[in-house]
Length: 87
Figure (cartoon, helix red, strand yellow):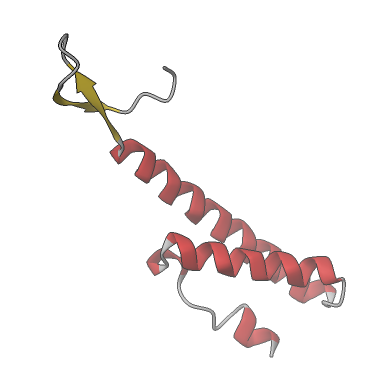
């Protein structure tokens, strides 16, 4: 059963954000249960780290695509500009 949960799991690079997040939550629950042998815990941790990185990359890509609406002096939309998280 452990092999199905770690080794035969879907390829992370093809997962949607939502699927990767669900898989990460499953990994965390299993690790927190304390009922996983050490070797499997290490494998789960490594997979969890890959899932976390994948989720972060998807979030970063989404943020880069967000645009804010730019208003003219009359308050009407005149276009868009890249989202700037700093402002």
